[in-house]
Length: 304
Image (cartoon, rainbow, N blue to C red; front, side, top):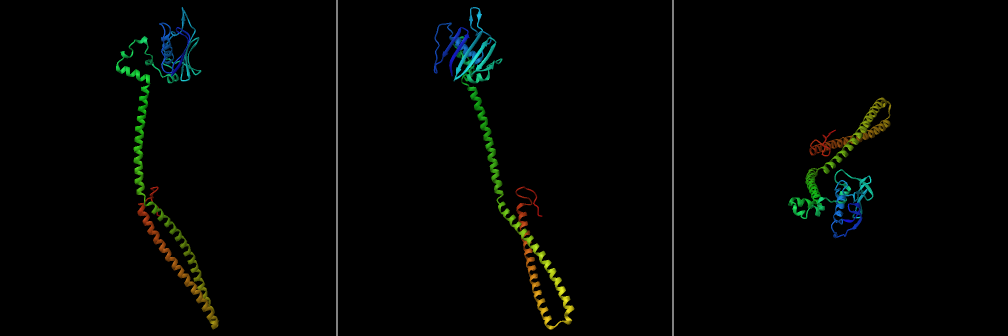
């Protein structure tokens, strides 16, 4: 809202300051007192019209050197100045160059006024009635910025349609993700089977190591038995009955130990066979569930 108008050397105003009422201001005075020139000053600042030097105050044939019109709007000041080498706008103390046409953008944003705001008496007493309905509507729109409101509404509507479309796509993706999740319900059981298979493989490796140790013990026992048999053959002729009995008892004890070792080997071989069968069963179940590929990375399943 324009709070005050200050003029210096503008047409018939040498120095005038007018404070406006926040509601309605009525200008009253005789013809030629400068009422219309106050409106012309506002138009000069808001629309940069008229061009040229017609706004400079004259006294007789002499023209003033500098003309200024200052508007105070919502606590801010805008000054249009011309003369003495100056042709500029000053906004809150900052100089702004005058464009070839129109007004600087900061001025337009602050005042937001156009030709429709200046339907003054010199344009005819029936300015609005002389316009077509379309022209009148256009001028009214410019006064209250309805064109900007329409533009904003159009942008908001376009954004709303875009967001709605994105929401629909997101809903479809969520639905597809839920279906995919339902198709992977077997994965926890598959992971458990995989861990069980790893445990069995570890146990199988341990059993194979035990089998290797037992085979070494059996080989050593067989070698010892051969040495015993050879020693008995060499000594049998000169031994007493008691020594033969002692050696027989010793050999019996060694044979019992060997039999226990053989029994242990048989038990280990049976456990190994059972572990291998369970491994084959779990591998087959894993292949059936995964259909030949990993359900997580989709790579071909390795059976090694």
